[in-house]
Image 1 (spheres, rainbow, N blue to C red):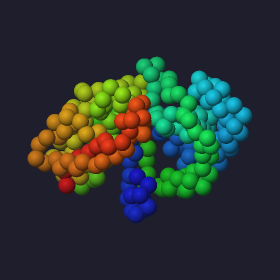
Image 2: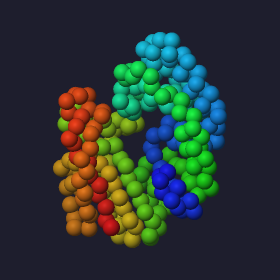
Image 3: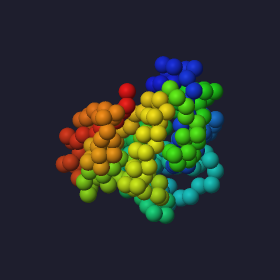
Image 4: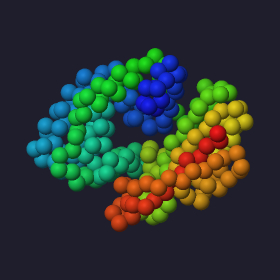
Length: 236
């Protein structure tokens, strides 16, 4: 998104996600970045005194203000195990503390740069299911899908991005939507793990599948964090 806006500042861009915390973070960084930075600096100071105790204190907290919700999200992302975002069935963030000596909790310059980019009048945010995006899309539009990746092993099952897991039925809905967008004349790009179910969902000749070798830092087994493949699926 940020690269596209940098190269094409006049391009209209809609960003949709079912994770309300993420959308809230975009809006807060756009509109109140100074307050977000100040809150993160407070987290950073307290974290230095007792990392483990403070991390789990923040993880269990339930802030009510927009700024505190967003700074909590960023703080946990910077200090949790491998930057993984995962919640349980009750919507509770449940990732343990990461093993970091000096995590960069407050990246002030980056936050200010991101804030300026997000202030583009051509950029809109929506918290909604991906099928609802169909109402805003027209012929010639470019649509990118980045769903929770399908698990490729028992130690890499991280589809709990919200308290509602991304299921095989959801993947089927996504594939059907991609077919509709293709028939409308849209350019469609999707990223996911290299798995049979994803490849089978996009097996028709219109879809081009490119394999990319990556290191996966979020596998719970450290010996299995290298040599994995992801795929890009596109119709152009």
